[in-house]
Length: 305
Image 1 (cartoon, rainbow, N blue to C red):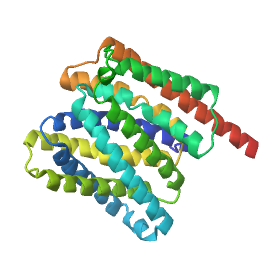
Image 2: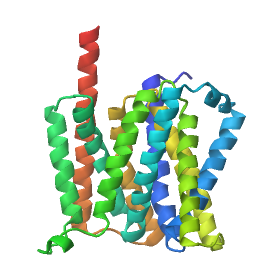
Image 3: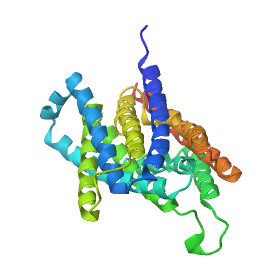
């Protein structure tokens, strides 16, 4: 059976959403027993191993030698942005009690992708994007608000890490989108894991952390690294070959629901009712922002044809 390109892209995005939802669960479990530097070293080390094994089998490594100078610089910039974004992301996973809350707040990513698209690519707001941005911001406020009047205690600790990571990830996504047609997704994934592994190793040395970790943490890292640095990143980049970033974001917004279910099964915990409501607001916001992007791309295609 021949699968249409759009259907293939949607299925890849859905697979990525399911995979990344498990990343929240297994990384949270591992970070309870390890230092962030230890976690990163093994998480991205194994992630790099899975990517290399896949690339060798599929003979994708050869494409690295054909990369142009401009593309190499793009990979370096993406790698550095990913280092910063990933560090803040896993710091949030570590300090926020329920990983579902982090997942809901991570829906800031499409918001910043849209915002950066307006600033960098001179794209214009549409009514869907405006409504989506409003819903995303409202949802994030509902999730994070603690009811305290002091500015330093106004929002849940960890919110600031998620916002910073969203800005950095969104910047990396825009650069990756510009280069996705000339760089194989496996190369992007290998580059990302390499940067993060080197950074984690440096942090291990700086903090004088041991390379010995608990067996239970090693198991969680092994499973999570297969789903995260390999499957999630690879499917996300590959999906962009078949569908636009807008449609991919719509499908990936389902991630939060999978995380919510996984957190309940694995940790027997749920966010407060108001946080779930806020999370649903952010999902609706992502869908509206992405819908606006899809509609705009369709209009541009009609004009060009």
